[in-house]
Length: 116
Image 1 (cartoon, rainbow, N blue to C red):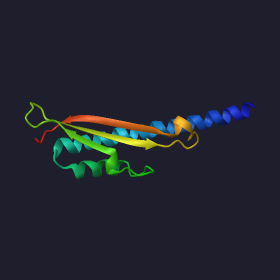
Image 2: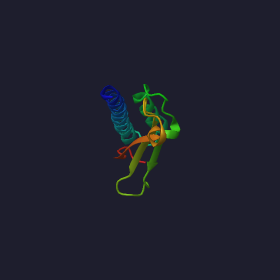
Image 3: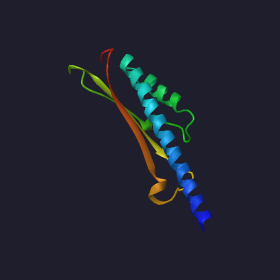
Image 4: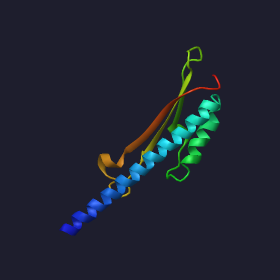
């Protein structure tokens, strides 16, 4: 009985560690994309490529539909870009019910140094 509980606990810890790892990778990728957006505000493909490059190890791979790029109006005092990624995380062991449909996300807002 105790062995069963320990195995289930270990599997849960493994899934939690994987989710934390993916969440940290998303955060890092969005930060890198924010740097690209601040330098080259009109380069959507460069921003998306940066995210995909940072997350090329994820399965399923990151697609353009998972990456959102939104810009503020150019006539504001400080034009900004908001970059968000929403990634469907599938736990390895507890892939049932509500635990099987987790969406991890990360976003950043950066000033557009290069203008609009």
